[in-house]
Length: 65
Image (cartoon, rainbow, N blue to C red; front, side):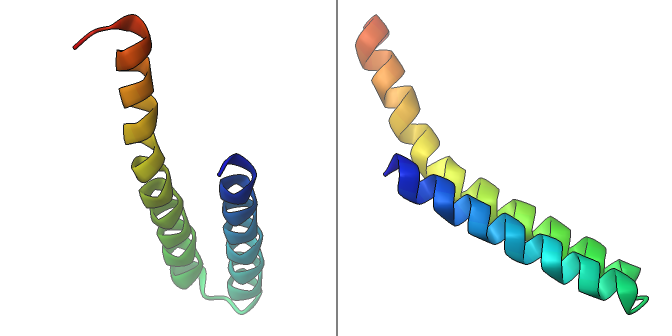
């Protein structure tokens, strides 16, 4: 789970950075900004799923609920 998630995030980051560089060279800065923002949102959505598991583990360790 850990390594798989890290590799997915790294792949998305590489893809987004290449697309942003190509779009900036083409003079389409607005689209480059949108691609970067979309990449960030995709990564955050992926992390939200695992954040629930982390919080449940913290609750269990410290016996909060």
